[in-house]
Image 1 (cartoon, rainbow, N blue to C red):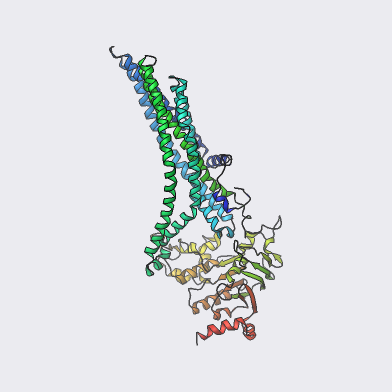
Image 2 (image 1 turned 180 degrees about the horizontal axis):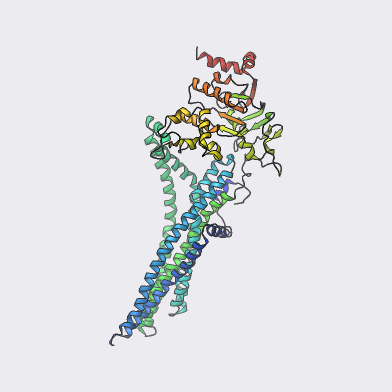
Length: 615
């Protein structure tokens, strides 16, 4: 995949061998960085183990020849048992080296997996929000995440092939004692497997890519039946059997697709296996004739039978290993594809800073934020969500966004937080376009409480403290944020106070109500040093009195901050200095409560409609 272009169709393209060969140096570099000493030790042990099997075959020949030679003669135990002792030593040494090799491999594998996970997590953090709202990217990210353990496997399969090739070379040398053509016969009957194995590996990987959506859907259906977030609806609506049936149907499609592929290859597999056995039989018959005529010893006959079977097995194993290596490299390529993604190449990605030296957000902001003829549509969707939106957010003012659901309010929040850039128009701070600022400076000056805020299954203190990771251990600051966000009463009611683990991931976790979680999320915002606070309807689980009390507190405690909030309760909205009415993606009215009521437009209609409910 190009390192400069995001192309969803790349998920189905098979890489060439040359492309995959370029992966190997990257894999070795990654593993070498983790533990160069362990890698060198494993390569050394691999070479030693490769020569054990040929050495045992040769010593078996020696043992048989010596036994035959001593028949009818006085027994020389030393002469007979020394090669037996060598074989035992080889077996014991092989077992010891294998145990050490296995231990080192396990430890290295865990470290490599951790390193690969770290790189994938780091890359995910670099990618724009637009990637995460593209379904095809989820397929690619899932494949990368599922196959990151294959990074370490690439090295092992290549080392395994090296080991088998070294062992095969020694075995060929032993078999050539019988006749050089014997080796050619074995190769000739086994090599046709190469074409089958290559084709099978390509088809397996291609099918796996094609079924990626199927696997993701099956996992989702499984999670619906096993996650606590959905269990209440599943039970109350009796959906268990329905979703179980859908899960089984999805899995059956997956199984049938694989079964169909395996059936296609079965007859070829059986035919080629029979061909290779015919080669072994031909060599064996020739060796028996040679032994019967006295051309070779009985020990050599034993060597021929053993080595010819092992050579056939090794060649077939190397061919299978080559196919496995090819497939492993294909799977590993998904991991490196994600690492190579350029964040700017997906539709909707953020424009990079316009200047080589991007500016920092002024502190304090002097004039405020200005939206100038802003239009926006989500990547991959032609529907225009915002159309020619223009309004100002004065510095240190309190601004409410109101409108019916789907009007575009949350989209405005995403643009203000610069998760996306407008497709037309600009958003400016003190006259400077957002795209002129260093993005870290811009977003660190925006503290956002989302409608679907995160609920972290960690301690209450950490749930608040993550609002400013530099002060996550600063307990006085956390307590102060809890007081400002109205979460102090919630935390004080917990068994271990701020040290109480929340959620249900851990046995000792304590779950909270929706309103209690909302207080924590708002307290999290008060940890920030941001100049702009944005609240995307974070108080939906609070009653009207609690919400008004909270916003009065926010207004009082954020006199030096710019506050933008979304609310459907007009008793809260009327507290704002400025109210922006959004309707079908456009700003239709701007003013304070009194001005908008006097205007008798959309705002007054919404206000009167809601007021009637309380009469």
